[in-house]
Image (cartoon, rainbow, N blue to C red; front, side, top):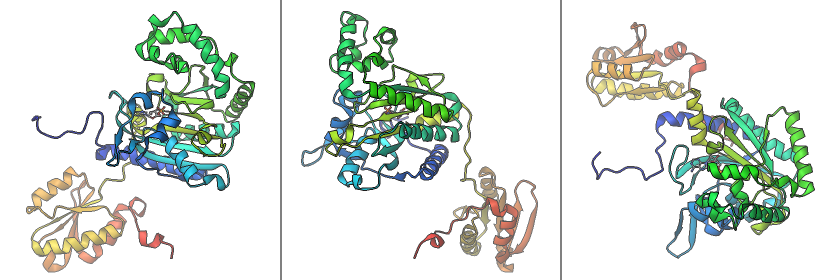
Amino acid sequence: MAENTFRSPKGVHDILPKDHEYHTYIKKVIRHRARQAGFRRITTPMFENTRVFAQSIGETSDIVSKEMYTFADKKGRSLTLKPEGTAGVVRSFIQHGMNKLPQPVLLYYIEPHFRYDRPQKGRYRQFWQFGFEIIGESDPALDAQIIQLSHKVNEDLGIDGILTLQLNTIGLPESRTEYMQVLQDFYAGKERSLCETCLNRLDKNPLRLLDCKEEDCQILAKLAPDMRDYIDKESLAYHEELLSYLDEMEIEYTENKKIIRGLDYYTKTVFEFWDRETGAQNAIGGGGRYDGLIEQMGGQNTPAVGYAAGIERIIANMKREKIRVPSKDDLHVFVAQLGKEAKKKCLVLIDELREEGIKAMGALGKGSIGVQLKMADKFNVPYAILIGLTEVREKTAIIRDMQKGTQETLPINKVPARLVKMIGENNLDKYSPGELLYS
Ligand code: AMP
């Protein structure tokens, strides 16, 4: 490719029509399951004041310390493209006084997010995430419900069999202080075995050393003291109750004491869905409880629990498992014409067909019938309609069955009804927005 041709920026991708079939299907599943469970959709702005993320996700997290797209606007205000969903939702919850609504408030989102990550498979600089948040109550049954909903979505998408649910409790922040000191003491003298990132975060965020993906760091993490010996009793009891609910719902999990999650705001429950094959490298989603976050961001003391997953990684898993999604894009009919008068008839006929729910397209810019029929072949349509000079004169049209190669001539005004019969009522793409409006 010539040097001066444009390409998308590093780490970001076009979603081409074939992949949109996956996006559409996944969004449909999320919307459906969220709605069934009483969640309402929220969309927060693509960018927020930088402090919204810095204050919530934590200054020492990977996201805040190196992955944010931060820029100054013309008045010098620091803004950041959202790297994750929860912080914006919480900002909105506080700003709009949602604590006055019946609690808990159940929200979900499906949006693009941005991180200045090192681009590689499953790691992009713009990616789609969906998420569920239950804000306003604390009970292990709510954590269980978030997990159940996430699990249900995985099941609907056909990928639950290749995922494992990794579950942990990290206790209350105040109870982690002592453990962090214990960890720092444990790592003292072992610095040479640590990767550079872990070395840098040993002082400020030693918990993160436990879930580092580097082999040497993992070996050390296995030997590290057990967090459960230090965290508060209340969190441990809360965790036991959550496990009993998951058992009741027959949702399988793996207790994994090394799951920490990279964001500072978590308390008690944390969990991730891992690909059985690649494990932690490619978690498709994760979440947990964040009881302190709303107060920390200036709201009242309000407990909450949430989950977020990446749509590109889900699609990659679906493709790897050869899971195909139904496509609604396939056309029913291709309309071919010869001459200006025929074109006029076609323009009207195509509109009538679409009103019946028949997906119809014509090559009105093309001349030869032969070329148009070849196009019909390429689009793989089951039927073609031909209108030439004779048909215009006789007010008829020809319907051609592309597979059988047979055709019939009938009055043009009978064509829509005839095609509806041939295609079958159930296969139509009916759309009558006017009828759906309330007045
Ligand atoms: P996190 O909050 O970092 O655990 O992200 C939740 C999910 O979002 C991950 O499990 C991924 O599926 C997805 N995700 C996060 N970062 C990226 C990225 N850079 N590119 C693609 N997907 C991502």
